[in-house]
Structures are given as structure tokens and as C-alpha cells.
Amino acid sequence: MSERNNAPPEQLDLYCIRHTAAHILAQAVTELYPEAKLAIGPPIENGFYYDFDLGVDAAGNRRAFKPDDLPQLEKRVRQIIAGNHALVYRELSVAEAQHLFQNQPYKLELIAELAQAGEVISTYRQDSFEDLCRGPHAAHTGQIAPDAVRLMSIAGAYWRGDKSQPMLQRIYGTAWHNKQELRQHLQLLEEARQRDHRKLGRDLEIFIIDEEIGPGLPLWLPNGHILREELEKLAREMEDAAGYARVSTPHIAKEALYRRSGHLPYYEDEMYAPMNREGATYYLRPMNCPFHHKIFASKPRSYRDLPLRLSEYGTVYRYEQSGSLFGLLRVRGQTQNDAHIYCAESQLASEFIAVMDLYRRYFDLFGIKKYVMRLSKHSRAGLGKKYVDDEPMWLKMEALIRQVMLSEHIPFVEAADEAAFYGPKIDVQVWSAIGREFSLATNQVDFVQPPRFDLTFTNQHGNPETPLCIHRAPLGSHERFIGFLIEHYAGHFPVWLAPEQVRVIPITDAHQAYAAQLAAHLRQAGIRAQAMMSSERMSAKVRQAQHMKVPYMVIVGDQEMAEETISVRERHDRQQSGVSLAAFIEHVRQVIDGREPEL
Ligand SMILES: [Zn+2]
Ligand SMILES: [Zn+2]
Image (cartoon, rainbow, N blue to C red; front, side, top):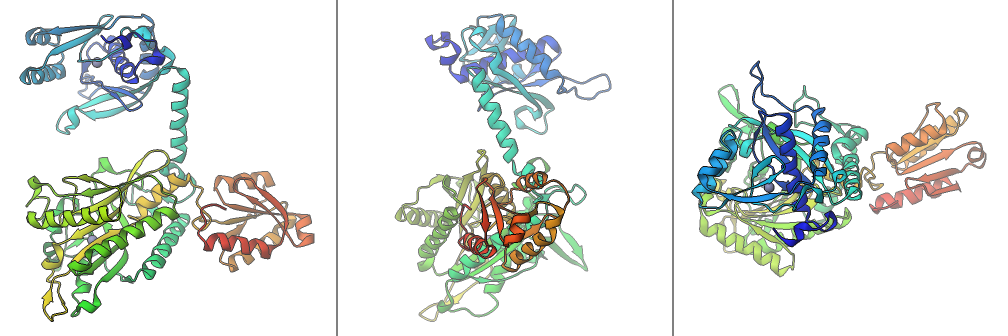
């Protein structure tokens, strides 16, 4: 036992505190549920969990914890802590361990594995409870502050994450050095809950998911649609300036197309089941690429046409497993900021760099400072299964991307077995303000699909040559990017994105006509504005506008009407009265047109 483990809670490792708390929870559960079978209970980030098998009831249903059970268990956990029991370590032979845990099938499975690996089998005991464990732990339970431990929630979990195994009951807890740290943690959780895009998406009327339409298929409400349109307008401007041509293509196509592209069979698991009509088989598209390849192939191309950059905000459908669906983050239908760049091999590096530059311009605009770029590579084991079987080409393209990233001084990490089936890529991961990870953007090199589609261009020497293709989506999909932005801004969108930019609030009913007239002027100036015509008290109207996080409130009463001015109240409470409407419009237009991050 290390010296540190005799320390008071302030100096004790959180790992030891949480690990010990997990054992104490297991003791509490075995006392209250003597039939419980114990699985595992590790410390995790911010806390710990323990998995239990509570068996089946008389009717044959699996027993589960109820939320009401947590307070009782938590009370017992505190009592055990207060008992100030030592944690006693011992090592056992395989036979001793098997005897000790004879009624614990999950522990027996672990013991068999430890024995096979030739590892030491050890336990820790506190009070009357002994658990299979290699430590480390606190020296005694009294080293944990009883008011810094909280049981948080119950979830189902499979033994070893294996769906063929019975569903276990997992109890999550959190444990800290002291009560203050626990309180801070709970505050952060509450803030995260307030920023969660699923909650804000509903509160701000951005999107809903209707079970009758289907899980993972969001409905965009008028406010959400504005966000989509503003992002699409931004992308269109950036892509126009960068020499892209926009196209539109259908959401379904015949099977033969996907056989040729390789989506069948390489991507089949993620695709919706086929539809049969008049002897032909159709699929919803999981990607836009094959459609753009057909446009490339629609006429003879020469080197003078290259690079050819075809872009589309294209809608695709992917069958995500029910368990992995999550708000806007994992959906079954999404609209991607997609483009395919066809170029000669000699142009690949400069085109790739231009795409990375575009990424960085977007990230600056949205104030995304923390991101990681990952070079996602093939794996040798996956060749012929997940990845097209041409290792020399994989290595060549991976080396090329690595070289581009190094020459541009762009920091990146590398990961094997994360590529697309047709080539390596750069994936960009970002974190929203509440620490949620989003895989946002992607920049991919494809050496597989162009030859499969017989794409060629006539080179300078008059000979046919196969182009390479870059697949890129800097803003990912609308779904994921807007989900990210909601959390990133906590719903306080910059003015250019805000679904409602100005709300005009009449102080009393007598000022309604003037308010309506002002809102009409604002709308004519291209500003999204509405007047609030309810006869509620003004403070209630202000609260509602604040709840919807409208950037500007324009308040009008007798004085404003007499002077033909307005009073402006900004989202963060800065106020100004006696403002002329013309001056206000000019200011707001500047903020919008400049896509200013702040008001
Ligand atoms: Zn342990
Ligand atoms: Zn593509």
C-alpha cells in the first residue's frame, strides 16, 4: 500500500477515491440484494460505475433497479464510509479464488482469464465485502468524504458490451475530494444539460424528432430551416469564390450504380434495404459521390477542364443502429456540405491544400479554436474487406497527404483502420462547449472510384488519363454542424445566423401599430424581425424574447412614437434610447453582412 493512500481526501488520488467508492457501492448492493451477481466496477472520468446482474423475478422478467433505489443505496454507501473500514489486500491461488467466488459467475470468468494469462489473482476487502481487484485503493473508507459521493443514474449495459449476453444493471456514481468539488461538478453537468443541443433544439424551435416519422429523421422547424439556409448561403459564397460549380442530384438510384462505385458491398451495412419496382432495384443513397462521377462522365473532358469541382448540399441516408442514434449527432438522414474535386495527380497537393485552407477559414468564422486533424489510414487486415485491395496505392496516397500536411505545418495525428473504403482522409474532430466530441469535417482522396466509373480526361499529350477525386465536406452535414453550433453558442447565435434577429416590443397595446410598421421596415431591409402583438406585460414580452435568445429587442412607447425613434436593448442587456430607425438598420446590416461574431 503506497504512502499516498494514507493521505486525507484532499491529497488522495481521485482514481483511488472512485475505485474505492465502486467497491463500497458493490457492498451496499450485495447487502440490499443478496442474490445480485457482480460484474465489474471501474473508476471512470468524473466518477465510477458498477455492473450488476439482479437475476429474474418470478414472472421470468429481468430484475432492474428503480430510480427510487438510489437514495437508499447512497445512504448505505455513506454508512459504510463512516465505518472507517481498512481496505485489506491479499493474493489468492486460483483454487482459493474459485472457491471464494463460487456463486459469482462473472468473477469466475475473470478469474479463469487471469489464471490463463498467468497473472496474480488478488482481492481487496473492506468490512464484510471482498472483491476481485488489483487496486490501488484508499487505505480505509474513512479517507473518502461521505458528502462528496453521489449515485447518479441507472443504465442497462451488456457484459463486456456483447449484445448476446444478458443485460446487466449499471449504477453510475461520482466521487470527489470534497463537497465543494462535487457541487462544482454538478453545476457543470447542469450547464451541459442547459446547452445540450437536444434540449435547446426543442426550446428554440429548431428541430424535433417524431417517432411516427422515424427515429434519426429530424424535422426542421422554421427556425432550424433558417440556420440551414444561412449555412448553405455561406458555403455557396465560399465555393463560388473558390471556383466550384453547383449541381443537384436525386436521392435514390439503381443497384448497378452502387455496385460500380463499390458502395455495394463495402458500405452495404450502412445502407437502407433495397426497393423493387418494375423489375429494377433501387437504393436510397448513402453518399453523393457516384452521382457526381456520372456528371463528370457526361461529356469528354480535357486537362483544360481540370480541376473540376462539383458541389452540392446533398441529402444521404444511412442506417445507423437504433442504439447509436443521438439527437442531431447521429441520424439516419442528413444533408452534407459535399463536393467532389476531379484533378490530375499533379494537381492533387494544391487542391488538397486549398480545401484545408477553406476549413481554416470556416473555423475562424465560427470561432472554433480547439480541433484535431486526423490522418485516417487503411489497415492491412482490412484490405479486400473494408478497404479496396491495392496496398501500394494506399501507401502512396497516405504518404502524399502526410507530405501536404507537413509542408503546410498543419498539426495532425495518424490513425490506422479509419479510412474510407476508397482512400485515406483527413478527419477533423471538434469539441462543443460542453466537451462533446463531434467528427465534423472530412477531406478524402479517392483513387478507387474514378477508374471504376471509367472517368478519363485527355491530357496535354492527347492521351486519356484517369483523374483522382477529392471528397470534401468542411461543414460536415447540416445535422451535425447545427447540433455542434447550438452547443458551441449555447443558442446565442451570431446575428447573421440568428433565426430571429430583431423583436419589436410595444410597451402597451397603443404602440402596436407603430411596432408593426417598424418590423415591416426592418424586414424590407432584409432583417428577420417580428413585432410582438400580445397584450402581455412588457416584462413578460422581454422575457420571452430573451428565452428565444433574440439578439436585439426594439422597445417602443409614447416617447419613441412622438420622436419617431426606437429604444434598443441588446441580448447582453446593453441599452440605448433615442436611436433613429435608419441608424439601427445600418448597424444591424453591417453586423449581418460582416458575419460578425458579436453584436
Ligand atoms: Zn478495486
Ligand atoms: Zn464523396
